[in-house]
Amino acid sequence: MTEPTYSAVNKDVLKPLFTPSATYMGLLGVVLAGLAWGGYCWAIQLLKGLGVAGYHPPVFWGVYITTFVFWVGIGHAGTLISAVLFLTRSRWRTGIYRAAEAMTIFAVMTAALFPAIHVGRAWYAYWLFPYPNQRQLWVNFKSPLMWDVFAVSTYFTVSTVFFFIGLVPDMASVRDSSKGFTRWLYGVMCLGWRGTDRQWHHYMAAYGFFAALATPLVLSVHSVVSWDFAMAQTPGWHSTIFPPYFVAGAIFSGCAMVITLMLPLAKLFSLERYMHVWHFEHLAKLCLFTGGILTYAYGTEYFIAWYSDNPYEWGTFMDRIYGNYWWVFAMMVFCNCIAPLPWYFKKVRTNYTWLFVISVLINVGMWFERYNIIASSLSHSFDPGAWVYYVPTYIEWGIMLGSFAWFFLWFLLFVKIMPSVAIAELKEAMRPPLKADELAAK
Amino acid sequence: MSVVVPVESVATVEPIKAVYRHLDALLTGIDDLKKAGYRDMTVVTPFPRHEVEEMIYEGRPSPVRWFTLVGGLFGATMAFSLTALTSANWPMILPGGKPVVSVPPFIVITFEGTILWASMFTFVGMMLLARLPARGLPKAVEDDRFSSDHFGIVVENVGAQDAGKIRHILEHSGAVEVSGGGDAHGEDSSHA
Image (cartoon, rainbow over all chains, first blue to last red; front, side, top):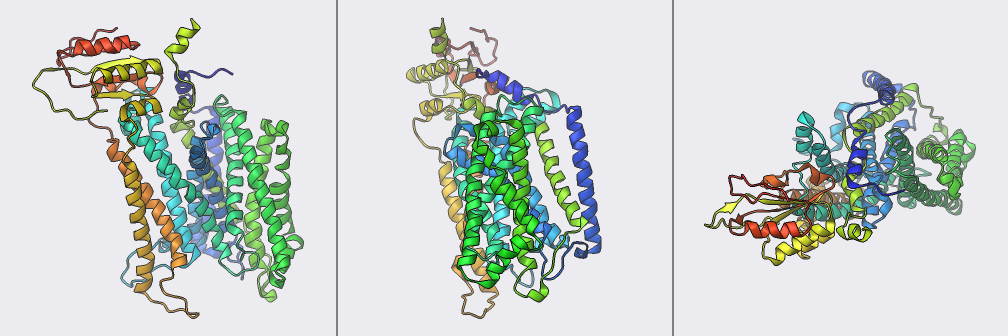
């Protein structure tokens, strides 16, 4: 395949913008319906209280926290791809990083809904933040839940700024190819960017620093999320392996979500030239690597539970396999440890259908992994007299469904108003037109 | 590079603009202008090129890094102070001899604060140094081709006696179009 020219890059990437197709409107309709259902379920919960969720002592964390951790995890691939692969100068990041970064931001925006949903009285969610008040009451900075507030809000802020900085030169491309009000609007959004030497000089320096700052951040955020569990003495949670295990899981699920989202995107908007099967193959390899770490971590958890000779720990782990939640455990092992294995064959990981099917399975599996950790540990904790079988209600499932709709809604809006492939960076990776080449050809 | 040059008493002409399709021709143009002693130029490219940066900034790093450092130190101080001072403000003595201001759990928030403020300062530093939102740019850089597939050089503050020479350099470096360089009222904009 010959390399496209610079002007062809602008043309191809800007083509999907603005005018929506019938397929697009159909998708938007489905998403809005899902969002309406989720909103209805949340409204019922706000009116009637948390009793409409399936909580029963001692289980007070359920689908909401599971889904929160799931979305924070999804939000890890984008910054990993844009920051870590930028620092390692991986060429395959250019085609996909913009859409992956957008996915990150929308995933964190989705995750951020859940603390408010989970606390029940959402109008008091601001109590999570430290603010000066007359009683001089402060939040408990020794609590991992507090660390989480800081980690997730820092992550959201930094990745949003990183995303918008990356967009600035491409917004200028949109401005230069449009007219009238659109031209004015994108002119404002690109901050009057012209691509002068001074602008690029400071821009590239800042971009490098953002990448360098985002890299430790991405590793820290899911570590902190894992401490929400690991700092508690609950059997099945209290383990030092949690941070690396969660980070690997986050990257695993995030890369799978990038495949799930970007395959249809590339097909629907004819961007296959820029989001090539080569990119997806690399993502599949990254999934294989992190999935391998995850499988190893699952094994280590069981080994340590047995080796520790702690009856509560071992009891919980046996309960995960043989107890009420055996099907959750089976889903987790099948989707996360076994389903990705066919990707070891090049034929499978370069086939669009298999890429898509396996990536969806991984997402399902990663949701069940968090459910397995949360529901099974809490419903089977220290006091056998209190053991229960927590079953989520339709309200909880409805809000979870609504969160998917909320996420896809933002993504659908993104592909229509922002260039989904980084134009400037794509050109940077191409061979520039040289007069010397033209003379040599003559 | 738009170093502010004091306006000399000699009459200046409107900025001269050269448009290039080839990267090597652009680099020749920059080099020839530098050799002839003209440094007050703005180079416009649709994407960053290290060669251009190297020719103009000659290895001088962007001061953005100082913003990052100061922001990081500020963030670390602020975040640690927030955790430590608020804990000391409400000294809840817990059994087990744990200190009110206990460093290990506060390191997590200090770390997040460091990253947050280093990023914010970097952002502000970039906006200030790159002069964004854009202002004071010569009108000639506003060309739709420069975000697509053309490169450009705009030379400002050219004295009337130098205009011909600069146009000659740019035309011979392989520009596909050279314009400007007429008197400040701008009737001359012939194309090469």
